[in-house]
Image (tube, rainbow, N blue to C red; front, side, top):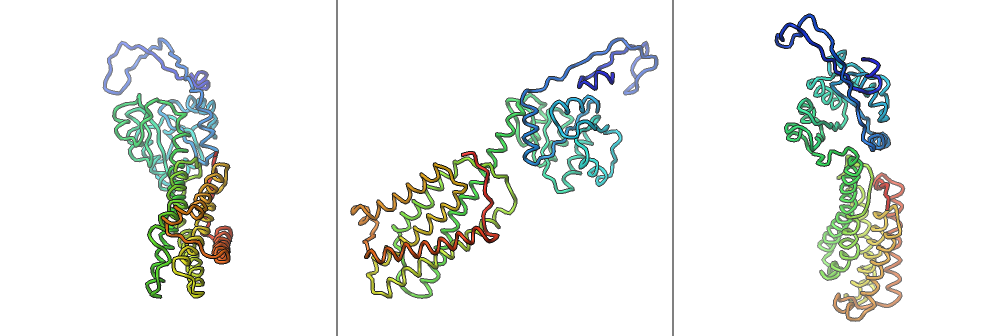
Length: 382
């Protein structure tokens, strides 16, 4: 039997007895009749999937009710680290701390009962691990229910499907990498777009507070925010939300967003107000001073967009160039310029607006690179 088990094959012994069964106790005088050897067929993508999770820093644990020798042999064929040292679950300690120590050191376990599977989940969770459990049988339901992420096979038992968070309808383990990447894309892009929107929120709040306290005309008309928001937030945010982004999901979403949005928004508001008030103190007409404020704000906002687009790729360059072209077109086409109420000031005033915007953008760039309010950069496959 050990010979077959060491090859990853399941071994069933058929025996006969003249005595009848008495509950779960085997009768005496059993006579072996035959060995039934069942070969395990690995899915082609199983080794690649296990390797993928290993590369992502996920510790793969194989737990089964089968013989430890059989489970270890199959796990070895899949490339599971530590599969050459399978553990018989009948020797595992009941104490949660001691069990967690064993689980940290070993990866393959056989003869595991349903209660032990559940205890393993709890032991790993007690060490701060996020535990995902896959299974298809009734004996997996306890662990599936208590795991942070329970995944059942579509062909599995109704009980397993009922308690699982996800059900793989195609029964294909190889879909896990694409599922993980899709989740990462959603989470990372939500964070990226949130930075765009919250940066605008903070500079709008600062502008409103300063104008309210200073009691001077607001630097923008509602239609000005329409063009700025469309070209630096709305259109780019829609495109970025659909882009590929495989950055690992991390805790601290709100902290990271606020660390970027608050200083970036404050710097944007201050620079815009400086450009606007310089024009007003120089007796530049109000509508032209507002155009200067719009140019300054757009210059900074487009740089913030460039920061959040990183790492750059060809289509992101195209996106930013298209937004800049759209803004220049708005200022250049008389009909668009009149609709958005953006009369052109003197070239010197336009240069001042762009210069102040570049200085503010440089400050944000330095802060993004040198301080802890920078944003973790994703690994993309654009």
